[in-house]
Image (cartoon, rainbow, N blue to C red; front, side, top):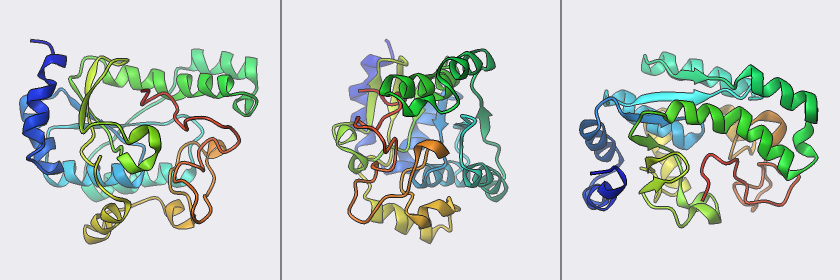
Length: 234
């Protein structure tokens, strides 16, 4: 039976479980085949804590695009130290980055949506595909209220592009619920969050948001788009 056909059964079981129980169940059902991609955002820090404190058999990795904020890189080290774990860091292929920069310029992503998506593909999508290859479950920190195009997602769903089951354990969590959990469990987080940076990606592509703005408004702020980089295509 294929992974895709197991979705309904898995979904029914997960509906009765909290995030930690769900992560534990999947790690037992798919030993050494569950991976978690963290961008070091607040949601991802919550999941990292859940995995580490409960000693779950889930591999944690992150993508260093080469354009991250120093605060994000420092958070990797602080997180590893606190939870005594190692986060695998993947980098884009030099043979892909160098021709892209030569063609479009170091900041060519500002010039068009096509250029920006090309940069995201080289720096994020391709490394992610390498990390997911051969695995069965991809855990993410997506929440439904983050953006309109994430509101229709399910806690567990099939990712056609990567041919893998995607599990979103915090999908129905509110922003305040997440912050309460972070404070109660003393989870380290990026100090940029306290400066109005709600969704944090690459430094040239992220700005702080104003009160009342959409949480994703600070991402690729110069363009009108769905505010996605291609990792979570719908």
